[in-house]
Length: 334
Image (cartoon, rainbow, N blue to C red; front, side, top):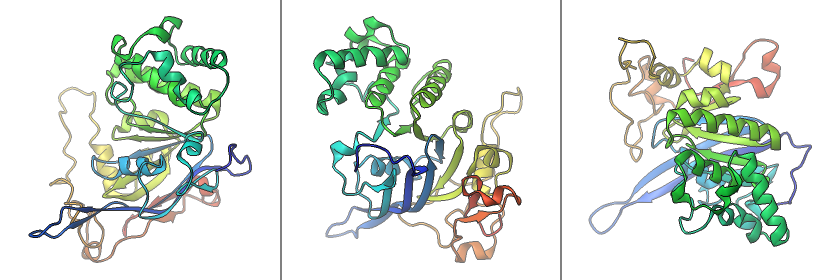
């Protein structure tokens, strides 16, 4: 990959029919099983935007993130960053363009290193600047994420969860990447701290011109942050659209169920019944046709026989002419 983004390419990230299949078990007495963790996913993320990726646990979100980071090789399909394929890219070169922020900041930080060492590690690996210049960049980055100078000499164990996540953000952004993969970055934090971290991420996005892929199961968090959303179910994208399209007029029954499952602050209403019955099917033995049909409240015979394609829906004469504002849904009766 080239060391600089192509300013003429409006897409920071493009996934082209991306799939990942795992073989599970197997032996003398048992046949191996096939698990399609990610199944023919195509997605386009414009530069400078936040794409939210939501779905239940086990739907393939984290496997997708690992492929984007070069930690897992796709079974098929391509990943393009700034128009350049990354499947065979050098891992060190790839790290200049894409960086992760993980769910648990404590497990992703070396407890034996001081914060200055942790944040400055990417600069040392890539031999960027002299030791003095690296120290100044670390000090500047810590200030930008809201940490005092004394934090540089602390260890992760001496910090709160919110402070540790600020350290993880500083380490991810010190290389000024084009794309940041945020994998549930606030789910391990107290609710009072979550809003601070989310606002910090938005401020830094504007400051550095970043693009985020924000993976979460928390719709309230995604609604606050994302420009567009993609909803995943059993390894597939079942709906994609702008924040307003998804939250104001969801088309897929699964998206509607996810939105209905959000807890309400009104007293006395309790936990909502989303009407999906049993949990997700066994991903090693997915249902025929539409994978969601066993749980779908509006399923018809066609749904068990034919898998719906993820197709664009016209949103009006003005919006439909702009691909970036089109909604897509995989449902026969959307």
